[in-house]
Image (cartoon, rainbow, N blue to C red; front, side, top):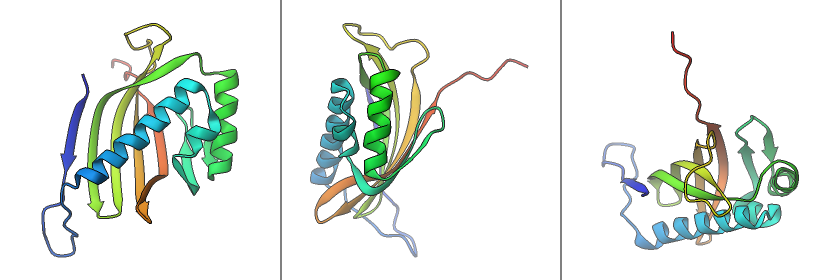
Length: 154
């Protein structure tokens, strides 16, 4: 089951107050679904289409992909050579609207192997997404993914 958190700024000096805009939230959810479908289809171009032209993506292993074109090429390479047939599952999500045109989403996900209902061992990761709305369209500006690993016991 997915946990959802929505944080809206408390009005203070210098803070932009936003409302819980259902349309914006629905647009962010639709963007996530497009990205998840592109992953399932192993389609680098469709995955990258959820990003702005000058976006950044840092992969779980630290590769830095700059621009939508590089994200498309890099993700296609991963899909073709490293990523097995999997789908993504969102385990937890925290959405914060910084202002009316900027959102920060911190999401915990895992990979489900084809035909499975449980997360693949070692696939859980946390990603931070910075999204902006321009001309009514939300796109990812920056995406940073960190694989969850346990600290060694001392």
